Image (cartoon, rainbow, N blue to C red; front, side):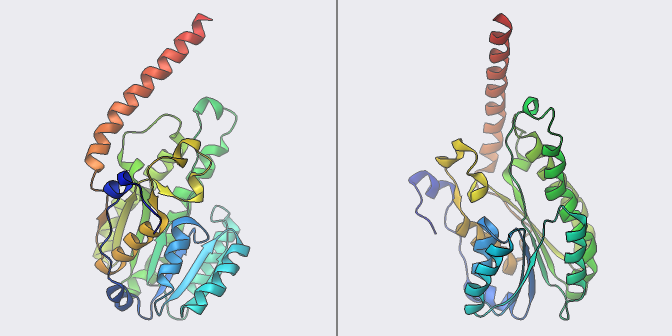
Length: 282
């Protein structure tokens, strides 16, 4: 785990993690991880590779997946790779066909693939793809994936872990419309479908992560010095959710964050209003 500042230690206290419980929970299981080539997905892959488990790693970058495979197999896990952009119909169809021919079925899906974007809607007036792409990867792709593999998971009494964001539980911020709307869309779908899946014996977990230090946040300059959870810490939280079957993970400070988001949004709205007034005065 990376070195934390004092503030990060307070915001992200250590997770009580039991390797033996994880080992027992994963013994002989087949696990699908999307967005596996970097960030949280990559760290989770390394964490689970120490177990006797079959990992199916999905990501767009085949070269990175191949490099990971050599290291992961040395740890004892069985590794299958599937390079695919889940926004593309043909590539998604290929993944689904692969999953349905697995001889041992499917026990666990970690829905982690994502794309971050921060842009004013006025900078997106001729960029509808900012919205269609985020909806494609955050909503349509996981819905399509899960709708296809639910029978496989039901047969194995498996588990689905949705890697979400605290932003889905906060008051929406300006400049994050594409990202927050798409993440909130799947979060709503997942929570709506949970009772039906649970009644069929499929365990479900929603994990609302705070800012996690991954390559995905690098384009946002302000986040480079902002307090952030390490990707390994995030992986351990997911690992614990695998054996504990907890329904939900949220940071302990979320209630305070929700209150702060109201104040922050009002502050942003006033700032935007002042900027517009200055612009009109020119």
